[in-house]
Image (cartoon, rainbow, N blue to C red):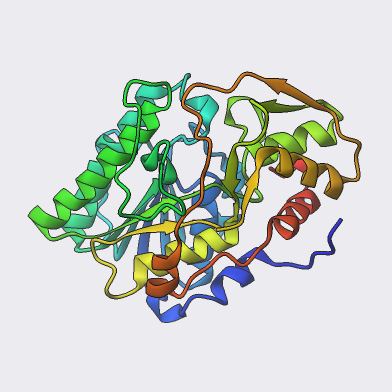
Length: 336
C-alpha cells in the first residue's frame, strides 16, 4: 500500500481563504450525505454557521453525528422537495440533495427528479429571499454520451431522456435551467458545478448505493469477485473528495463566478479494468473478476476539460488515485 499521512479537513481549509466563510451562515441541503457531510464539516472549520438539511434517504446520521455538538451546527431532518420555511438568514445556499448512485436510478427515479427540480426551486427561493450565493451541484451526466474529449462546459450533451439514467441526467439539466432562470428573472447569484466521479471516506458501498470504487474495495476486502460491466474498457476520471470540496468552496465564494458552469473533476483518465487491477494491487490481493452485461446508456468515456476551473478558480485535482484509494483503505470499508 502507498504510505499515506493525511487530515482531510486541514487539507481542505488550507486551500480556502477563511474570510470567504468566517462568520457567514450557510445552508447545505443533502448535508448528511457523502459529499454534503464533508461540505458541512469544512464550512464549520472555516468559521461558518451551518444549517444541514437532510431526510436521510441516502445520507446517514453517522456522517454528521460528530458535528452535532458544535454550537454553530444545526440539523434539520426534512425532504428538500417538501415545503421549506426557514427563517434563518443565509449568505450561502449549497444545494447537494439528491440520490446519485447509478443503481438508485431504477429504484427511486421520481424522488431523484423531485429533489433536483422541486427541491432546487425551494432552495433557490431561500437564496432569493436572503440575497445569498447559490451553488448547485450538477453532474457530468448532463453530457450523456459525449463526442468531444476532453469535454468542455460548452458541450450541450447527448442524453437519452427516456432511458434508465434519464431521471438523473435530465433532472440535473432541469436544475441547471432553473438556476439560470432565477439568475435572469430574479437576479440570484447562482453558480453551477458539474461534478465528475468523486470518491472518499463516507461514500456508501452497500447495496444500491454502492459506487464503483467503494463497491470494488468492499468486494476485494471481503474476498468476493469484482463485478466488471462490459469488458471494463469504459473510462472514468476519479476525484478525491478533498479536491472536489475545495473546488466547490472556491466556486461558491469567488467573485466573477455568477452564472458560470464549471467542470469539477480529475483529468486522470483510466479504464474500469485498470481501476480494479489498481485496487487489487493496493490491497495486495489476487485478482478475481467477473464480467456482466453493460447497463443501458452507461457512458463509455468520461474526461473533463478542467481548464476553466484552473483559470477561474486556480483549481486542479491534486490527489492521485493511488493515494486516494490508499487513504480510503486506511479508513476501512466499514466507514465507507
